[in-house]
Image (cartoon, rainbow, N blue to C red; front, side, top):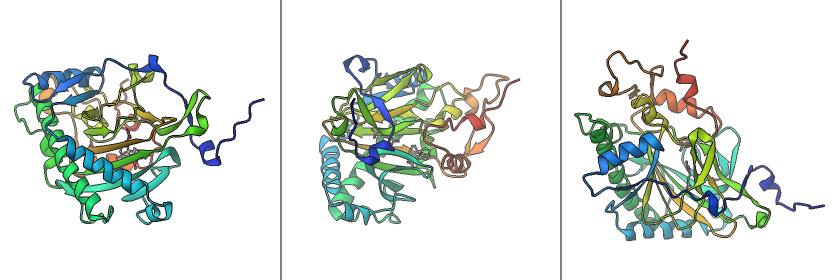
Length: 330
Ligand SMILES: C=C1C[C@]23C[C@H]1CC[C@H]2[C@@]12CCC[C@@](C)(C(=O)O1)[C@H]2[C@@H]3C(=O)O
Ligand SMILES: O=C(O)CCC(=O)C(=O)O
């Protein structure tokens, strides 16, 4: 008989099959942001996967490296010191609990508010000057990447106003959130063929999310609407972009928000930064008129970002949040 001597908290975190080499996905679309072909490549990737990798983005490696080492230093503190930066909601340090409805993952994190191009003054965490300035530098840089991606997307979609999507994020009240995740290794499960869930499967509610991680793998995306999970090879020099639910609606389903999750590594810790680009709370999320063919109707009931966000916080992580806004066809 095999007795699993897991620490109790692991019992509350769902297990996933440990990824093997055959799960590695070699087909992640790579977009060279410095190329004139970027616009077409982004649209193609968003239609096929809702996910792509961005290279030649112009963000200095030092900007990413400094933010990463400051984050590592923050998470290395004593638990009591980190807890002083909590709770996670509305903003601050959190551990294992994700959202407000009982989801758990093998991670600790900082959930932070962004105000135009830096961390919001209303968000006192992180408090050390070095960590704060490193994150501010990173946030300013990643936001520019998000803007360039959204501009290229509009161009690729043939929308006359190149800023149609990006201005939703950069305009007054743009709802930007920044998250620093730390997934410690979970060695208790080593050799058992399963791993703790780092971050359970979900789609992101916003327009796009821009992710950067250290060299530790763990991110997986769902292919064929969840029929298959594949591992995304990590690349500390690149950004990964996810299509979110709001962009799915703005394109009337042409782009699909991609389901993704993180599987804990049994040996190495993963550190990731995710910038979530959302519009102002009062922004109506309806298909862009230029993307609707004559007579084509929206697949979704009309809502504002504020309404969607409020509804999202009432759901569990893995729920299909868009389903309640789909028009049922008869
Ligand atoms: C169960 C949860 C946890 C949520 C809200 C709700 C549904 C979706 C989750 C996310 C996913 C994307 C980032 C985030 C910041 C967001 O906007 O939606 C997350 C948020 C949280 O981690 O708090
Ligand atoms: O940490 C990661 O690599 C991804 C986490 C994620 O999907 C999220 O924070 O919404």
